[in-house]
Each structure stands twice: as C-alpha cells, then as structure tokens.
Length: 583
Image (tube, helix red, strand yellow):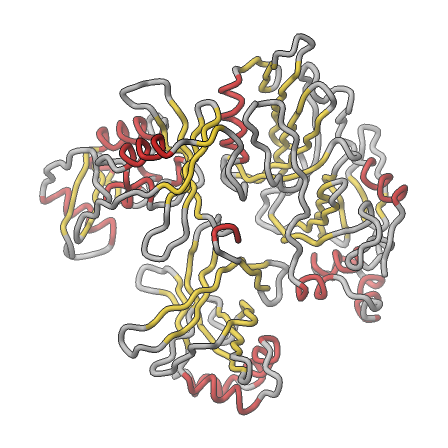
C-alpha cells in the first residue's frame, strides 16, 4: 500500500508557481498566469455566477490500465537499472510508472525566482483508499500541452487533477490544484486543450484558462469572473472587460457544455415548448442539424445538413465546373445525382444558421468545394426529411439544450442552440453531441494500444447480418463523443449469439503499420479470439476487416487461456503461419 499524509499531499499541491491568489478569485479581475488541469463534471446553473462546481469522483481507469502503470510489488530491477544507467532511455510510460511507485521524484515548473519543488508519490493510495486527501486515481492520458504527445493525469477528489509531462528522463508536474479552493481541470476548446484553475472565494467564481505548448510555456490565457456584489447583484467579466449575464452564460456553455455528461441547469421546457422546438427543427434546412454531430459550428458536416433538406437553392453548373469537381474527387463520372450550390449562398447560409462570418469553404466538411468556380458540390441518391422527437430540454438565458431521440438504433444527441435575439432567425446551431452516458442506456469501455500509453474509448453493440442471419457483437470507436470506425467480428456463417466481448487490444499483427485489433469473446463456457485487421480503401481511409474463422480456430488450438496479449505474442512469433492463413 502506498500512502501519503494529508500534510505532504497539501504541500505537493500548493507548490505550483501559478500566482493564483485565493483572495483575488471572484474579486475584480486581474491578469494571472497559471497552470492546471482536470475535467469539470458540471459547471452550469440556472443563475450565472452563483454556480458551485460539483466535484465528483472521476471515472477510474480500467483495472488493467492501473495494473500496467502502478503495481503493488517493486518495479522490475532491470527498469530501475535502466533508469540509473541512463534516464533518457526510458519511455514516458516507464518514467510515470517509476514515479507512481515512489522510485523517482517529479519536479514542478520553476517559480518566479527560478526555484522548483519536488513531489514524492511513495505514499499515494491507488486502491483501498483510507484517506480522501491521499487517494489517487489514474485518468486517461491526454495531450494537454498540444504537442501531439500524451501527458499523464492523477486525480484527487479533494484537490483535483495533477498533470505530468514525462520525457527526457524527467517527470515534470506542470499543472495542479492549489489547495481545496483553487482546483485544476482541463477542457478542449477552440481547437486546443486548455488548463483551467477555478474556484469560489465567497463573493464569486473565477475560471482561469491557460493554453500550453510542447515546451510547457503558456501561449494564451484568459479568465471569466462572476462576482456577487455587496448589493446582491451579479457582475461578469471576461478578463477586465465587463460582460452581460447572457454573454457569460454563452461563453461558459460554449467552453464547457459539449463534454458535460448531463444537461446544463436551467428552466425545464414544457411539453408545449418542446413541440414548438420540434416544429422549428423540422423546417426545411434545419432538420439536418439534428442527425449530424459536431463539437462547434466549424465542425458541422454540411453534406448531412443539406441531405436533410437544403433550405438554399441549387444552382446550374457548366460541364467545365462538373469536370473540375470530378478532378477534385479523383473520379471519372458522377455516380449519383449531383447538386451544386453557389459559394456565396453557402457562406450566407452558414452565417445565418451558425453565426460564422465569411466561412472558408476550403475547410467545409461534407461538401466538395471547387474554388475556381466558387461552387460546392454534393452527390446524393435521395433526400431524407426526418421527423424530430425531443425527449427533454432546458433553457438558461439565450442558451437552449434539447435531447433529440436517436434514429435507427443510434444514441440520443444533445443539441445546443444559442439565441440571436432576431425573430426572423431566432437561433444559431452550436453543437450536437452523442450521449454515451449510462443514464441514456449506454456504457463505454477503454482499450489499450500496444506499445503506447494511449487508450481507445469504445462502445459495444451487436447486429444480425442480413445475408446469413447470424448475430455478432462488434465495437464502435468513440472519437470526440461520436462513433468512428467499427471493429467487427464478422466471420461468414459463424453465429456468435450469446458471446460477449471481454477484452480488446489495439495493436499491429502483420507489420503493415495500419493498425489492427484483437478481440476476446466469451459465452460463459467457451472463449475465442477474433483478429480484425486494418486496411485502407482507394481513398486512403482506414477501416477494419475481420479475419476468417480459420484464424480463430488456429489461435484456439494453440493458445491456452486466451488473452489478447497472448494472442498478439503468438501471432508475432508465428508470422509465416499467420500470413498463410490470411492470404
């Protein structure tokens, strides 16, 4: 058991040189450079600025993930020897592991005087918690300094997150909470991960946002303040600039709202109001926003929006324009119907529906933009205009959130609208997030990536194949709270009804560097292994294609007590046999 005293942990938490002052939080805004990080579970309330951030226990990493990083026994002697001989030889994961086992120290960033502090993890509790102040949970690594590499996260329920950059033979804690009243979290916003210090100090709430680069330097900062004045009124600031309550709510929701698990707090919409919103969303040109998902307006798939009914007129196009379109997509002919839209019409529609002004059509998703003719093209086989069913909704100032019932077995989505104050165009579409939380009947899992510290989030489902009538489970990878690639177990005429996916490992089985997956399935009396290999289509996009049942039989005959790690090891040591099987 590894423990740390409350005093020692508090000392470790307080040493970050961020300059956050408890006496200043919630008062007149001041410019502060700070470092921190975590994930806010719920930051929205009906009355802006009166909110109290609810700190809930973060979802723990899987047992396998924790055991891989932190073990009860002492680390292998050769790893310690490797570190003592040359710390530069250790991977980020190995450095973090030694730190968590108490074998090496972490250091903080230098303070204003150039001094650093050390952090000793030898007494942290990673299981069998006896003291809330010393209990640590390993969270999924994230790229917190926006350099393309993952940083490690420890979370304490009392103090919040601690962030560690592990490289060049060192473990550096570059952000953490500063006592019980200034906590640390992180948030993806405007194309980057931001580290946040937040807290309440009696007369208000403050959020301080810092964006780091790979050198652990703060490249951008801003802060939001909600101040409870002596006369009982609320004042709001972005940096030193006063803003309205509505502006504060919009900023807070556009920053934190997408990743929040639950609905924002606010006034619950009546059944009559929900019907009005359904009618609004079913209008031509709007329904498409309900069945495409997007974190922010820049991410909207306009092909999906227009597929649900354009709301803007199509335009005639010349033979030359069509040829330019075909050249852009690398095809010789148009396979389906082809719709064309003037660039100015598309830009105007984007501004009207999202608020984005003069959007760069070269970055548009779902449409093909031909700059030479300033036209957007969309191929379609038919046009769908679907009904919208709203399960519930809330309103907070100008922000409206609606839970839209999923279609065709897909999960529900949470649509966020921002009021414009213009009766002719009352809302801008801001985000639409798939809801994977358990309260909506879903459960997600994490799977490791062999040879790295990355974890892949996925959801499990099953389907009946129309060709052979067999039932097979599969997983869908979740990226940014929406499903991406599917990793299936489709083996012709093999019925896997009753089998559950017990383990998933992302790895490389055949040396083509595309990325593969191994799935372990069990029905209570039988365990099998399924290999799904990565392939690329003619456009260069990767997908997963399941090996035939002969691979599953081969593995079952040669490996006792099937696990994904054993399967990968066996395939790598029997490459000639494996490549014969998959010819």
